[in-house]
Image 1: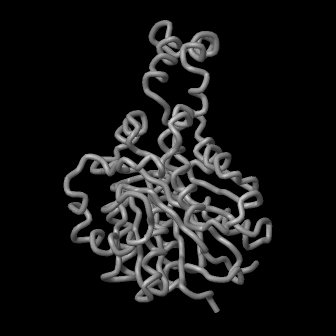
Image 2: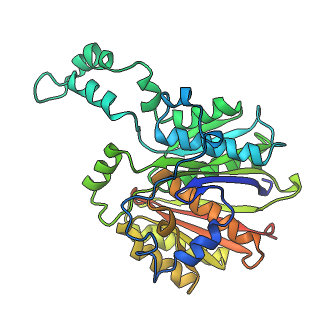
Length: 347
């Protein structure tokens, strides 16, 4: 299959709108020595308020979860900065998080579905759904994190929304890469969008034992095309997921072999707290002194973490000091994701 180039990118994060400069910020603020303090003791890495011209139209907001809103902002930003990109046949593969609708609507639906102490499915269908606004469904369906952006931008190519708690977003990048490499479409977008700030999501993470996590949010997209497309920002050489079902140690060992084969000059690490030490040790064994922790800048943005780390790594390639960069992902899901970016096509 043909090599794949990254021809455009976009991001919205706690740093605001835009991806240029994220590599430098991660490099300066995400070393092992400063990773725990770079966020300055804040409770959450929230996307700052965006000017109305860069945000979603107010009448559309009632249809969207927070993740969908951020996905729309990132997609619109990408096409504004690269207006020559095709739309109708462009593929779109996105790592998405859990549902994140309005809490008051969710409370009304649940209250009507619990006649006593236990959830009643029949009552949910007869009374629970009727207790909330019908438009609430568009906030709850997590595939609409992709759908809202695709509809808004007129994208009609191959697509998939992949549920992600970390490495699932690497699968979204891999699907986009394969769609281009196989010739299924000329251009494909890959990335992730999510928010860990929703109270239901945050409660889930706390129940899962994610102590020490600074919840974050964001969205980031990479636009990919064949290597002979013309000007490129870099080349996407690897997108791998090493399942952690048999234990993290085995997944990390197979990842280590891939990292050594890749020969990166730096590793951008997107690691959940419970796996951070093991992931950092692995990355440092391959790139001592050149491991940068993206969570120190973005917090734990779940489905968006891997894509935010990827655009930061892409940014590191732009000044010419780094020619090969790896992204190592160990999210709350326990799988290990690996993305390889290079400034030149591998020989």
